[in-house]
Length: 402
Image 1 (cartoon, rainbow, N blue to C red):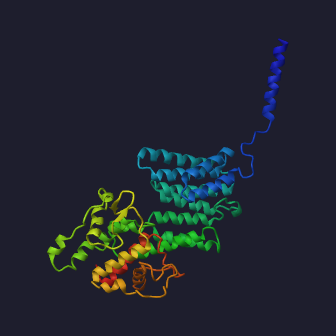
Image 2 (tube, rainbow, N blue to C red):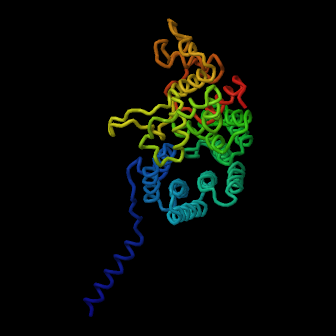
Image 3 (cartoon, rainbow, N blue to C red):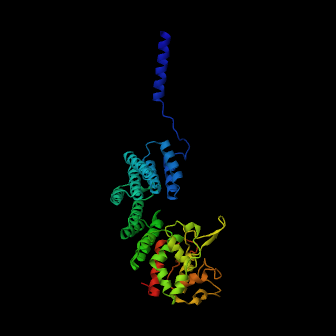
């Protein structure tokens, strides 16, 4: 009995000692801490590396289960996942996870800086999910974020309150509230002479301004309105845009005097990769008229000529497309050689010997396409939707097409 009592007392002693001991830290190395993992996770999120970002946020919570910003990060991760889900059940699951993490971020916010991170996360989640009354939710979050008195040096990753204004600009852009988006991007820039979000806000302002100019010049059809918002236009989109906004089929047919010649025209074949494509007819129209820059391309893998509708259209390719349309509309073949023989190019990134040099010169001198302030044409960058619409608007005005 005495022996049992002694063992029992020893056991109680060990329990007391264990209870009084400090908890063992899970993360002990200098860089293995919640703020570091959170900041890195946010960077990965901006790069579109959703899975890697999720791993970082989860590590932050492993180090400290009560770390509010990491829950905000996971809320954004799950909102991004929900955006890509086509099956309603999976989307609902990811949406639920996003909202749960957002609730935890709010509940665990211990500082004003944590509250700011929570509100920006809420704003970005609302923009991503676009549930009922999402824009009002986003506006409430940005108002609450701006009201907070924070030490901007402690705003991990965001680095300044203007970040909330920038992401509200993104939200307005997503909502097609272009004037409000332009104002928010402008406010972002004006809040600091130099800040982390200035360059992004400047790009956002220029993009919105271009969209407003593009959509204000002509009455756009459904296809045009959708493409105007795109950050890049693929070959399928371009075929649809030209068919819908320029009425290429009707336009070119009007240039042929004999109806029998028109009836004979048709695409030589249907590329395998557009057989079931939603813009199949528009693609075949481009092939029917032989639009340079939108021809089928030989694919080494399949050993076949494919249209490749999902490939983006570069600015040099778009210049070739517009030049060819111009030639077909005017009947002036000299346009294609007007700038041959130049010794020097006015563009630092377009040599006078480049196959697309003549097209670039034609488009810039006629005001259909623009260069950077540096003079660069940005030949290999993808055409965005607003730029494509603007070029079509100018072409329509030049050729008196309505």
